[in-house]
Every structure is written in structure tokens, then in C-alpha cells.
Amino acid sequence: VFPAGTRGCQLDVLARQFLWKQSCNYGHGTGHGIGHFLNVHEGPQSIRMEENPVKLEEGMIISNEPGLYKSGRYGIRLETMVAVKCLGESEFGKFLGFETLTLCPWDLNSIDSKYYSQDELDYINRYHQEVYQALSPYLNEEEQVWLANKTKSI
Figure 1: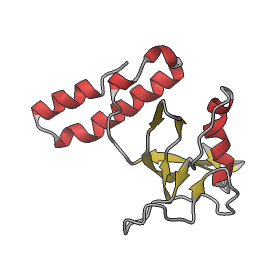
Figure 2: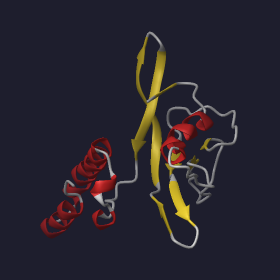
Figure 3: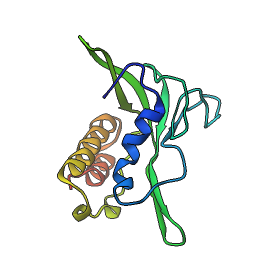
Figure 4: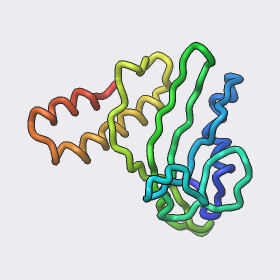
């Protein structure tokens, strides 16, 4: 949740803060605009460390792709698409947030729950619940069983 008028560089800091606490960082942007003619990095919106005067606005589509790469060892990056949407207004103005557009289960075999806080596990479980609820009506029974297994709580 963020106030209307927020720029991507202001949100980028929030995404990186947890890695910075571990003296880690990633060398790419946290997010970029998504085009509709296969122009993958389409602006003007972005979420990155570099200053960009463009404010995030309702209806913008942007990637959400923080990651971590340890040279010669491993890397991890989950990339989803999100839409900026209005979450409400108060006496302090309009507040925006993100609606996840990419609905694909994350590989549970790659998630070692001992490294996650309960809040992080709850986030993953809520996301998987959303994936199942959105996709299962379009699947046959066998496919629903497969998806239920891939989106089970951890």
C-alpha cells in the first residue's frame, strides 16, 4: 500500500531493504513497465534505484522481480506481473497497491520454510490460494488435483 504520487524509486528501497540487511543486493531493477506489442521493458513506469519522475498510476502494468544472484553459485528470481490499483481513499488522500496478474504456482520443492518468517509463509499460502481459486474453475478434475497439490499450504 502506498499513497498516490509515489514513484518507483521510492518503492524500490522497500523491496531491497531485506537483502541490504544481509549486505546483499541485486543489480537489476525491481520492476519495469510491460508493453502489449512484446516490448518487454516498456515505460514510462519502473521500479528501480535510479530516479524516474514518473508516478505510478492506477491501471499501469509493471513487473515485480526482485532477485539475488551469487556469482558462480546460484540465483533466484520470481517475476510476476502486477497492476497498480486503487485500494481506497482517506483524509490523507488516495492509496494504491498492486494486484497480481501472473497466477502460477511457485515450486514448493524450492521453498525451505525454515528460512521464512511466518508472515512470508502466510504470503506464499495466500498467493497459492488465490492461484487455485482463480484457475481451478477452468480445469478438469485431474488438473484440479494437480493444482491443489502444487498450491497446498506450507
